[in-house]
Length: 258
Image: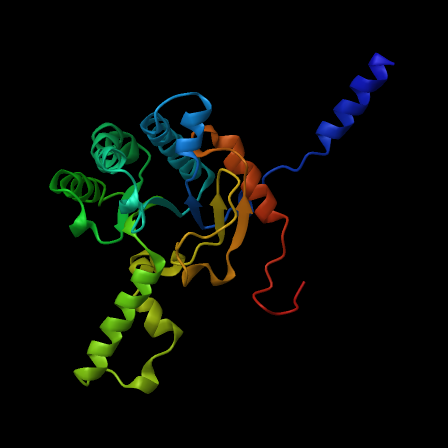
């Protein structure tokens, strides 16, 4: 009976789906959730979860680059996160400094370029410097773009784009009739990503199933994968499993094609 069980188990594992390297989503965006819950489960302070989550960012960035992802966008700090306790916010503001100080050489080694979207002028001076230095130091890299959303909110992004368009109309540089989807997209923060501005796959960790004000315009036709792992537990296999799930879906973009 035991031998039979082993045989069946082997047959089942042989049927497990395998990632298709020819169908890797060009732009993956991740809502990194669960650092605090990960820490609470281990009776650790919440900042311990953020520290461990930083290590996960490093692992997933390299894994995504090696898989052939063109853009990896990470929701690092939202416009709403300022509402958290001051000690936690201060710690979160230090993370980019520590992250880039230790990880930029690895990013350059893997030909990864750093970009940032969000209002970084509201960040502490040291954080701004770390971000701008990382962007400058990796500017010659032409592989995957590691795009951080820092002090970012989807609604704020759209409001800013509307304000820019309104100013152009007021200055008679743009006619109202000329405003279309492409014109709006040109004034969004993801315009810097070019043809990869809209994520094909959005992943959210920690079991929550909501958008939390992230890329509200860009995710119009994105595929969503919600996973139960807290962000510090998310690993390369987790990423590959999410991509496999994405690859098993049919993206119709509102049409009826197979």
